[in-house]
Amino acid sequence: MARICCLAAIDPDHIDVLSAALKDAGESALSIVARLDVAELSRLAPDVLVADVDQVEIDSLEVLRQLRFVLPECIVIAYTAATTESWARECHLAGATGVLSKDSDKEQLTNGLRHATRSGCWTDPRFAAL
Image 1 (cartoon, rainbow, N blue to C red):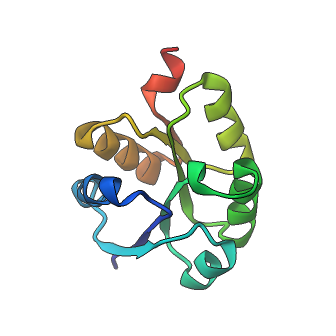
Image 2: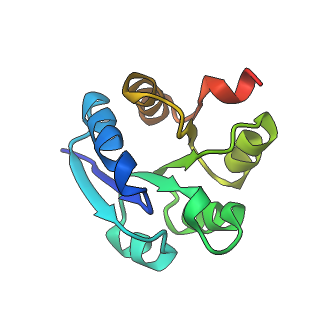
């Protein structure tokens, strides 16, 4: 059975590359929502969620905590432009399964999504390299 994947609050310029990376990582059913709205995502109940945590109006880490609370079984991927090791750690502690950099290309995103969906944890190597 295919898992439901969702892209939330993703810049339109990034949707194609993320969609292709999800497909290459073995995920096919895809929904796209314009805002990172916890209540809406709770109703949608995706199995895999890639969320642009830079696009929220409130604290990004609080949004990740809320998503983890309402979607306890979901693979939550924080998609972010910030690349500090401490930011990646904070995202994981707030509930993100994976943290991916917006600077990643399709192959790197595919690799990260594949690892996060299969192993339950992934941090883009860019964060550790700084």
